[in-house]
Image (cartoon, rainbow, N blue to C red; front, side, top):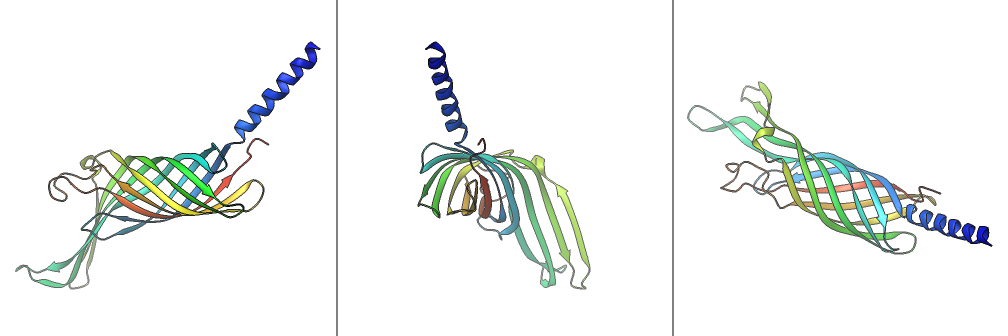
Length: 219
């Protein structure tokens, strides 16, 4: 009787552990990204991340991960002569910021097979490197290119809000395809105080993400 009782307890414990571990899902996301700051031209990059998700219910989950994202600004000005008059040349400059990103998102999903998804929550970014890139084209057609490391001029931490919508399509019993449009709106001033006005602008990106997520990892 004791052995039967112990066997029932171990079986129940094993089923509980399996039920919990099968709520964990791992994935990858990658796609094009448009970075912008008010008053400047947008700049285009590619972003990607490794994700982890814990399913609390059939419709709600907590999603996080670690990703690489580039942000920044671009500016285009005419080349001027000694008197300050515009010529046919151009001066193109950009600030390119590289971040490690960690979002913490609440995720809702609705539907049966193909599901609509919506998620939102805070993100935390850590600046890896900031580079100023300068391209000058003189009226004669002569080109000049240069870059400077400006990491020390920018604030290290970026904090903001992420929100996205998309669809989830099952490819197999354990593999899902997700397509999502996500906006990352910065709330912290990451730029030098003299960059724009007195406070500096915040980062913002719009990402089109294509991802794969693996479910039932421990079966």
